[in-house]
Image 1 (cartoon, rainbow, N blue to C red):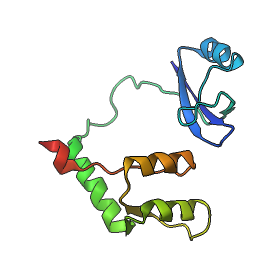
Image 2 (cartoon, helix red, strand yellow):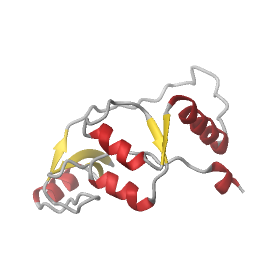
Image 3 (cartoon, rainbow, N blue to C red):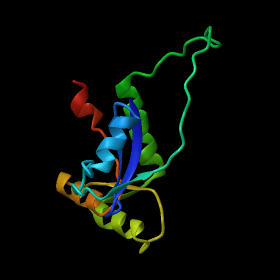
Length: 138
């Protein structure tokens, strides 16, 4: 399986997953690769770096203990609260203003509805919703 990065004519960036290069080429030539945000078929490939994965013959370091998922999410949320500016319900407007250069660039977080997040994505503004760990853990 291969992954290829794309951008549509409206500037949305996304990735496509294909069985092999021939499958990608066939779909690209037929213009059947849609943008997941606006459904545009006018997409072009964005060239990005590649990675080569190799396997060592023997482990070089002892396996590391993994942090439980909910603990990792709590730590991530705490990092955001400690290092980002809280803008509350003004989040969609502040995110757009930063994205379009109206306000100075800074890390922010706040509240937004699903519809507001969808609208931000359509405007090309990248956001990452935080997970309410307490709601999902039990």
